[in-house]
Length: 393
Image 1 (tube, helix red, strand yellow):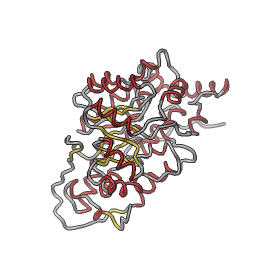
Image 2 (cartoon, helix red, strand yellow):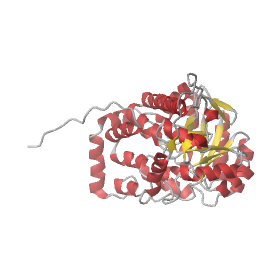
Image 3 (cartoon, one colour):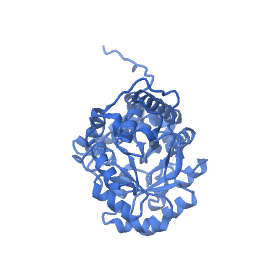
Image 4 (cartoon, one colour):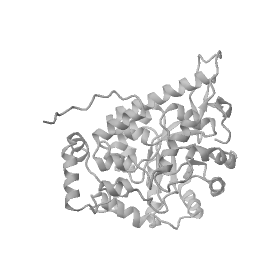
């Protein structure tokens, strides 16, 4: 006779711990959505593996009794060189998840970035915000609606506009097709997804019942009455614009009039183009391995992009960042700051706002240890000398 076994209790400390707790708590299709990449997930794997291959140069007998983790990005003070990257549908991972993450980021003194496709709208997040947050913009075919989103972000006093440019077409995410997120699973598939919900009552109570309205926040005016994930998938496929060029970035900058960040740069030539378009910063990113597979990992692309930027734009970094050590390595290769993606969403799913708070505290402690044992006392002191045989990264 089979014996029922309770899952082992887990006190989360590391990225892997939070990932496991998120896996236990979330519906299967929802975990697969955030955990997966495209095609065979080669780039998804490489983002982390290439960071792991870098080695920090340890130095001893230096006075590291006073450490300064603070920095500035786009002229704004951060308590440490870490921010929260935009993640779509975060409100499905925890009740009003974008607001919970915002509060944790504000308490830690770092920026939160609201996704265009978050469940919480610009206005809802603004009501909860005590400080300016960032807004991430996808360029859609309806330029009038794009202009409206920009004006709403200005009205909410967002601190920066982050234009994501690597979604000309949606990537082929096979996990989402297998899990049923894309629809078309048939009667048995729908029954399996319903049973999955029965098996996760905590998520159902927190998100499906208490987390309403389950609409797509800032883009709700474009999706009147839409409630299903296939509706969202169809919207992305039919409304995100494959004709976007650097001229559109210039147009966006002219409407926005504030700090403009281009996210999704993976090539030195595009870094130069971003500077010419009027952007003040770029994010070296491959969308977390969720767009085109078999492209370079972000950390392998970082040094050449920093060189091409030549100080004309500030260079931020995401992709595979799981710890303060990863942040340290990115800074050593020239990044101004690193953005957490999955590394804040897993804790959000696991423990809500408290989880994001805890992971930011952990990253801070890890970064402090990395500085101290590398023999540097401030973020400004981190450079290639702090990596062993860094080469080109």
